[in-house]
Image 1 (tube, rainbow, N blue to C red):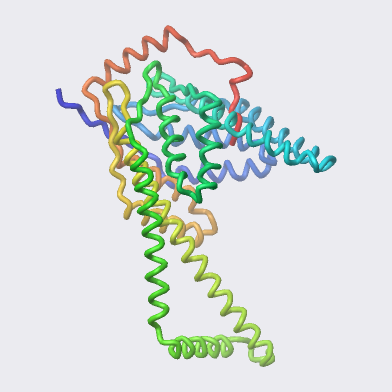
Image 2: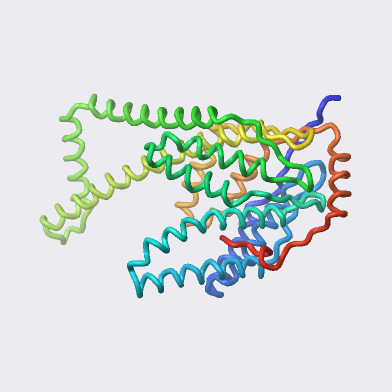
Length: 366
């Protein structure tokens, strides 16, 4: 029997989310950050509730106080860290090492919490990751990538994605990622090679430009700045102002080019790895598909950034909705027996129930 495609549908609206986002920001400020736990719940429930496939949407069941308790633990731990090193600076290396060992625990708890409180058709997801493996993949391998000048970084990302996928389940059914590390190495190699080639082309273009033309341009630019200054200002002041503006524009051009490269790199890597991850993911007879376009995603990233700058940040809610909407519109789930599969998991879920200990029933992290 041929598998049936179930597209993932996102019905979120930029203006609708802006109202939620704006209220969240204002109340978080007025409450000195306390309301941020409620804000996180509202944000997640909005995106979960507007994401659906096969006629049903996802749900997020966490409660604000659970998140607030987790954040309080993190804040208290950081305050104690600052107080201790303030009284005894010699303990800073030891405490930093302890903090390094605590990071995998935070990752493990945050991932487990988000999975256990996420559901589809009343069936919860779950995460069964163990601390030693998370420490290996999220701490040891990234450190090795630094020691190898970044050569081991793609492998670290591959192991992280593989472990998180294989240790996640829907009800009693585990996900399985069949991807290989070579795709991650190839993706990062192409991205870096593309950036190096871009830099080389630009430097070569500068070398081809006549030095006299550059000098004439800079002279004309300087004279134009001087004529636009206040007529009452002195000549020396005008010279200083024109040089300052010239330096500011050069710095602005440099940072613009740098950000442009970051957008190119992140869009390319995000596109290839997201597509590869979903196209090689399975769940007991169900397969996944993703065909995000690099050029479309890059255009969305670029226009989002431009509008965020022009609106002084007010466009952020629309930017998030645009990105999520496009990515999900490129994804689908294939299955010829999705109803019977979910029915089986509903039976298992009803038998097992949902019980978590008080200590683990918190979201440690932000």
